[in-house]
Image (spheres, rainbow, N blue to C red):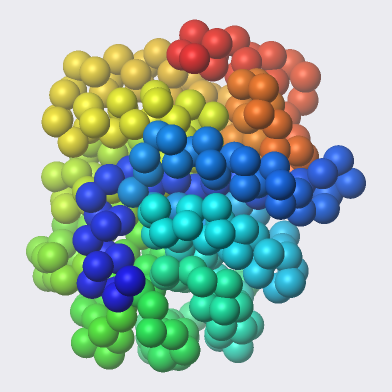
Length: 301
C-alpha cells in the first residue's frame, strides 16, 4: 500500500506491538510467533509493529530481524499493515529499512538513533536519509535521545513526502499541542508512551487518534474495549479500567528498569500463551511479581 493508504489505515484503530517469541535458549521461535499473530488478528488490530520496542528490536541481529518481519508479513497475509521497527545510526538504520522492504513490510517505525544526543539538523539529516531509502511510509518515534519540536517536524514533512506519522513517547503536552496546531492532518499521530492506555484520553484531544497497545498481547479484548471507550470519550469506563487494571499493572511495571517489555511477556505466560524469556540485558519478572500480575489479569480475563 502507498504511504497515504497506510496513514489512513493505522490512524483508524488500535495498533498492536507483538512481542518476539524466543525459545528457552533465546532463539527466535517463528512458529510460536506466527501462532500469536494469528490469534491477535482475531481481535482486529488496525496494524502490527513487528520487531518494535516491545518486540525487542534492540536485541535482534539483522538476520533475525528479517525473519521476524517476514514471519509477520506472511502470517498477516495482507489483512492488516505490518510496520517494522528500524533504528541505530543512519547507516545501520538504512540496512534495517532495506531488510524490512525485502521482507515485505508495509511501513517503517523509525526508532531513536543509538546512544548519542544530537542537534535538530543532525536528526533532520538522519530521518531524511532513512526516508530516501524506501518508498514506504515512515513514522518518526519521538522519544529518548530523538526529541524534535514542531518546527523541526514541519521541516521534515516538507523534505520527506513519505513521512506519514509521528509517534510520541515523550509526553510533553505543550509540544504535542504545538505540533498538531502547526501540522494538523499532515501526519497520523500515535501514542507511544509506555502503557499508552494511561494517556489515551487526553491525547485524543490533541489529534492522537490511535496508540500501540502492549496489553493487546495478552488481553486483546480488554485492549479493544478500552480503545473503544477512549474514542467514545466514555470517561466513566476509561477511568474504571485505569483504576482497576491499568494503574495497578503500571505499579508492577515500575518496580524495575526494563519491565515495560518484561511485564508483557509475563502477561503472555499468565494467560497460557508463553512467548519465552526476554533477552539480556532485560530481566524477567520474579516469582512474586509474576503472581501479582497473574492475579490482576485473572480479574480481567
